[in-house]
Image (cartoon, rainbow, N blue to C red; front, side, top):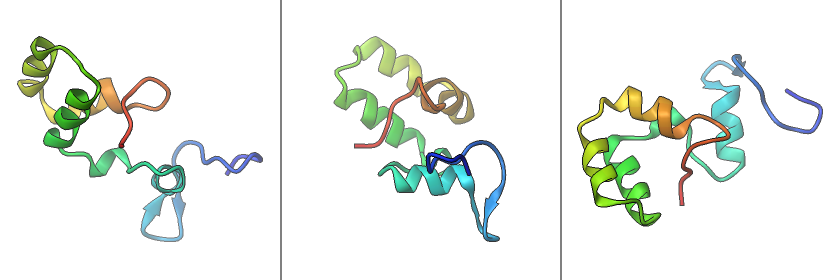
Length: 79
């Protein structure tokens, strides 16, 4: 855990939840592992993303979408 209260990198809090998951829940988000493709598409639609982008995203593998859109500091977040 970082000194300002943020978690960074790998590791586990206790035996069942990663430090990154704990940090996501603490900031009102859900961990990347809990996102499903329909969650990502719904989040894109709520942000007025173009229909063409949403259609293309629907054909992309879920793990690729997570890497592109949900990685910390440049992705979408839960609302």
